[in-house]
Amino acid sequence: MSVSWSAAVNLMIQAFPAHLLAYWPFRERLRFPLWKVLLPVCLLQIAESLLFGHIVRAGGDGMPLSYGFAAVYMGIYFIFVRDDRWKVLFLYLFVADYTMILWGAAAFLEARLFYAPGMGFNSWKSALFSLAVLAATAPFMLRYLTRTKERVFTTDAPGFWRTAWLIPAFATAIVQIFTGDLSADNVRSFQFLFARVLLLLCVLVVYSILLDALDGIRRQAALAEQAEMQEQLLNLQQMQHKQLLQYMEDITEVRHDLRQHLGVIWAYLEQGDIDGLKGYLEAYELPADIRRTFTQNFALNAVCTHFAEEARKYGIAYDVILDMPERLPISEPEVCALLGNLLENAVDACREVQAAPFIRARGTWEDGRLVLTVDNSCPQAPTWEGERLRSTKRDGLGTGTWAVKRTAEHRGGTAEFAYAGGVFYSSVLLYG
Image 1 (cartoon, one colour):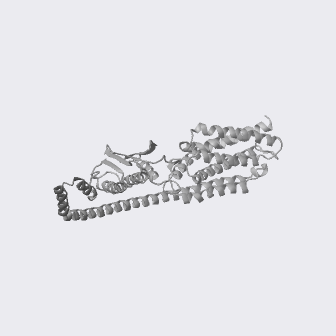
Image 2 (tube, rainbow, N blue to C red):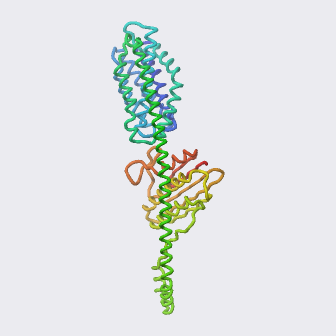
Image 3 (cartoon, rainbow, N blue to C red):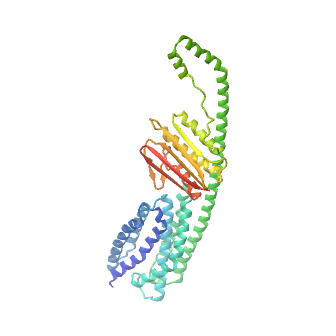
């Protein structure tokens, strides 16, 4: 086999598993099916390998070419993997570090067993050593990457991820600066092997500490979210109490003025002024009826009552019926926060609708499951970015629907959102 072909084949054998390793754990977060993602990547890798082989045959250094293609592969990774770009960069650099250390270990083994002065590492033997090291370490790394991915993607801390990617980036720089000399005499030394292996162990230890810290951040976020739910529920109950007090004051005033109103009505009737009586009655405004019961559950009813008053203020048709028990067997603050997010988003959307805005909500608890749907008028189709909606209140991603989705997934359920014909549809399933 010619030098160019052996170099090209060696690079492909080394690179293809690395691409698969980078994408496989995140296949559920790809914008397209896995095969549609890997096909252009593989075609690009073939082109790189052929160019690399041509450069090696001409006696040149193919590493600058590989660095250029590495930047292209990273850009493609950003396009195909759906999530925060800093998280994606963090995970991609982790895979890059592992791959470089793997290649270094393979080169060390080849140099120790088949050393020759001035030897290179682009032969078929290099490919076999790379495959052997990959086969020995890939199962462990796939498992580690899968666990890492789950912990990374479930931690929503934008400020943290903007700097966390520097950890694998520094590891990449250390590999290149201190073990970048791939001459045979350097590669066959145990110092080279120890440097790369210890760097890999260092990266894994740092990542483990980092992921433990992420678990702490996630637990703190959960506690803060629970405290916020409790505070929201308390605020809603306080609002309902104030509304009840205001209602009682209004009723007292109505009773006090009732005799005068009846006198005016009789005066209109005695004069036969029906049009005047109609005008008077139309102008007369009774206090809002806030005593309506939307559900037997007191906490949920407080949420529904609050947003019923909000809907009344803006002329929104409000149709809410929740068939819920007095006490839910799951966290009521969680359910209240979830329902509050949905109704708040619905009111905000309806405020922008000119003609006949409406909110229609239905919910039930049955066989250990809570099913909740909220449909509302919506002036325009929402904008999606990955799995999240962009906020209509500020520049950036929305938090309401994302919080609903996280709560549903935490309870082993689902949250689905759709838009059609000027209506936004929300459906939530929770398990007790």
